[in-house]
Length: 146
Image (cartoon, rainbow, N blue to C red; front, side):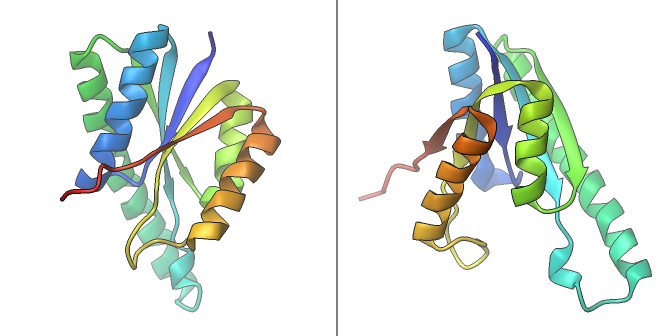
């Protein structure tokens, strides 16, 4: 049936998206992988030694966050793997998707000031990822509280 790749920034805000990926894997009896990309490009004007150290720290943080996601998947009977990479999501995600043979990619909709995407840019990114990887893209939408 193929593999589901869940790209995640980790943390509490990512849990609903990770849960969506876990449920899709469970429903379709599919393999699941969580991807965390350590991106220190926001430090591009900082000394190289500092960036290397930040990359290491971001990678360790990502590994920890993904360990929790893998454990939550296991609690629901889904075997998942975790993958951490250093780079920029736009470069790393299609590479990992092709490497793993992902047939579905799950994202959360970026929101807030920490988002690197404007709404229309995010839509174009999703379309581009789908074209680059031949995987369907599922965007998890948070329910709006009333």
